[in-house]
Length: 287
Ligand code: AMP
Ligand code: ZN
Ligand code: FE
Ligand code: FE
Image (cartoon, rainbow, N blue to C red; front, side, top):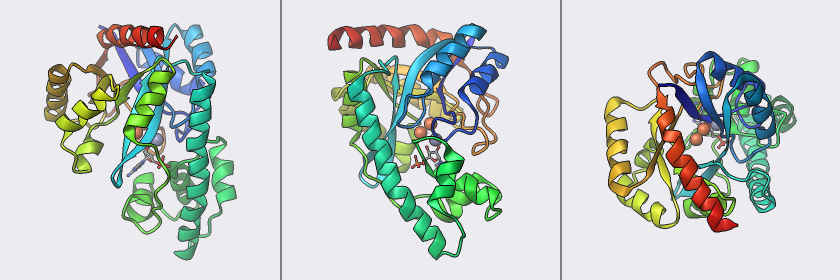
């Protein structure tokens, strides 16, 4: 049974590798289908489709949209969406704009803390419109203020740390609506974020399902066996699709590799057809 990977980042958001390199790594890991799910942006998809075609890997158009519930973030993955949809792109553009209003405030805080960094440097390093905290973390690594992205988050950038600045984000239900309006299937990413935020997962999933959520990311690089089993049970109980992926980022998550996560990840290709079928239904309902 071959493996797939439905959660990956590239230089189009805060990943450190090009789309072509990520698809090549997938090929080496014997991954047969891949979803590029950059944060708030879909510009990497054409290159993924082209490289995927060369290497015989199916590319599922994807995105990962940041949303907020209370003081915490929830990420919603979108699959099989019409990534060229103008309304979707306009909405994602607004989300990226909120990054550009928050990031200079983070930089200002870092400067107040005595670190010599500018937003121009971050933007140059990022080379994309979807500029994120991992880019700031990389700049701090390059300037030897920290040794790892983890240290940058733990000392400065994470929620509750001195350079943290929240940004304007949609509600999860809005992100789900945007994905569905573009003919896609919406999936709750890394559900541990919801539980860390103090949310009771089952009622949350039930509420999100009533607003259009189609699935839950059951298989994930950091999930323990117990977590995977729990999420599998919730997916069955609430009739949600099951997805999985590595959340590969490259150098800011150096222990996570395409297709295999931290070594034990195996997302079965069998998960793909139900997802495709749900997307086809979503598409027929939007057209
Ligand atoms: P942003 O989208 O700019 O708010 O940055 C959030 C992203 O930073 C998340 O999607 C993760 O990819 C990454 N991230 C969050 N916490 C950490 C951490 N402790 N170490 C490394 N990367 C992190
Ligand atoms: Zn990221
Ligand atoms: Fe995420
Ligand atoms: Fe991600």
